[in-house]
Length: 196
Image: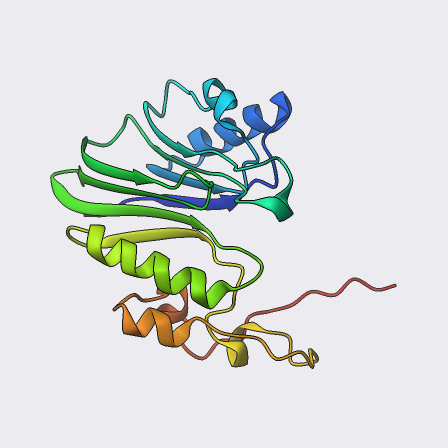
């Protein structure tokens, strides 16, 4: 089974222009699973989360509009171009994650979307991974913005003097794998710094 998945950080979807751009890009990319974090959409904005090419949409609304006070909201959409059968869902009321057990093109799979907090990440992810582990059936496709590096050595700017937590040991403990890092095991993440 091959599924084309796109994960992106919207940094807010409250303007009609950004919605049109999101759906246009999703359709043009021929993605089958779309994962969007930091939507900043509240529960009352759910009608904005509709598109004819993506009939299966799961939305965990932002807890509050302000990013610092709660989850930023996540959205997971499945294209009409794949065979999709929903089994069960767990949607975080604070806008941090959505978990979907389903059958995608006749394969049982768990789709998971997360938008990690900017503080206390390890505590949050330990609870989240435990919830995901208990919920999942079949392989897990996890996307989102973790707001924490998997490996400080490979994913952080070497000029940064601040000590940072990393996610590698938690991923290993819960038998999860960073696919990009798996395919690029020794490649350093590139940082771009603008000239001032």
